[in-house]
Length: 392
Image 1: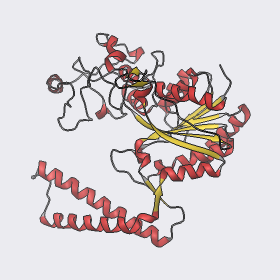
Image 2 (image 1 turned 180 degrees about the vertical axis):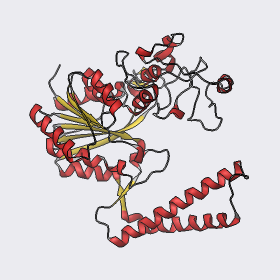
Image 3 (image 1 turned 90 degrees about the vertical axis):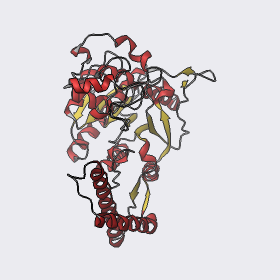
């Protein structure tokens, strides 16, 4: 065991913290805004202080910084909420959730840890933010672009809805002409406004460089570290004084070549729970499906979705592969490969590589949110073991 002291920001239920704890780090404190995640965090990290509240609140920040200054802080970990960077849905560069990394930067500035780890979704690699030094005229032009993109998205949705239900949704030739106009307008504005924005990853790296940290980032696939899930996450590592930075080497591969272990499959991870009765205290909570939906599940083969083309919603998992990304939304819940039901919170927690003694608090829907938002414990532990080497 070492005595490196860790602060976990945007901690959620504590997947990163658990991985670092299993690697021998001393988890001092965590912070998150979700009360149900906080209850889970406190239950599973009894020696850590949990700060429940909004990190953008100055008083909350002061409390965290004061406590960590008192206790000592060697490592800061955490993943600012990723909704604004996700590859799914609208990617609004002005979404305040996409700027929470600034709060992370500020706390790093105040506490000056030896090293930090920041996790985020793959989408962060391509999204752009407005430059910091825009003129009012440039801001106005960017607003025109966003309004045009929003109107275009609304018309595209209306056209799709009209195609499926022309009685309920009206889409006219005038709408189609407007859609063509917006397509050209968006193209023109994007060509004109390209220099008004910069990649958010470049902005993040610059922020930390200005604080005296060397920063490297890399896209890691959780399955390559023994997690039974093909979850890709961007991992930033920053070290003071221009220290050399590397990322952990994979321990697993799809076919187990080059001396690596083979990817862990879903069946290997949850096969022993196939016939287990419901156990609420173990988070093994079964879902009661209507007869109509149950029939749909029964008619859904492995590798297909209950809803046909909507492949991410109620997808029947391949038993002999790692799972797709476990998501926090109910529509993303995976259908069991053998049983005619969606997977339980405990089964999904196994796919996130949480140990069985990690118990989630709150209702089943809250447990699913916590599990889907978490960093896989196996990936977190692999990162933590590597961080120990960088600190040696």
